[in-house]
Length: 177
Ligand SMILES: [Zn+2]
Image 1 (tube, rainbow, N blue to C red):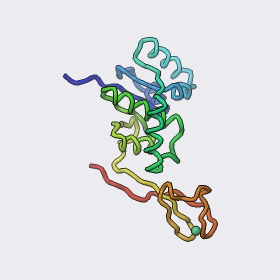
Image 2 (cartoon, helix red, strand yellow):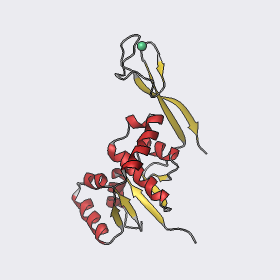
Image 3 (cartoon, rainbow, N blue to C red):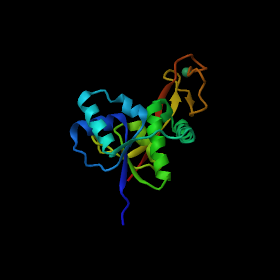
Image 4 (cartoon, rainbow, N blue to C red):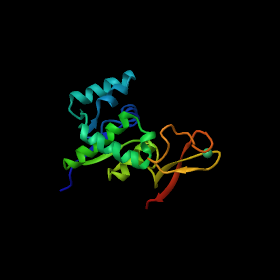
């Protein structure tokens, strides 16, 4: 018997889903911050109807899970591209997964997909075809080329040699099959 799939949606995926899809997903989870980002009136009405019918559930992840996702995001550099809402949605997906649920995270956000892959959370995009590689970031000085691994960059993100503002760049790409 196959387990029923559970879907976790970020704000853009939810808005997309609410405006273009009939309710084919049986069980959807979102966080409070995702719900609060939906301001479009039609989308809001659909959202409330799904809530009433129990298709859609609102749940916030535990503090512990948020910290775990943040810790991982710091290692990859995705922490600079992710909002608190993004971290929460990933933490919720991870939490549901650890409860034994077969989940898919619907998102079109590259940084979310990147980190999800490292956390072994399955993702699917409603717009793009999903990502084909994992990226790791580092800091580099645009003028002298000084290079800093994540976590080793100066706190003020200013090059100690020439005073330029450091830039985040893709240090390594790993292709996925
Ligand atoms: Zn420099």
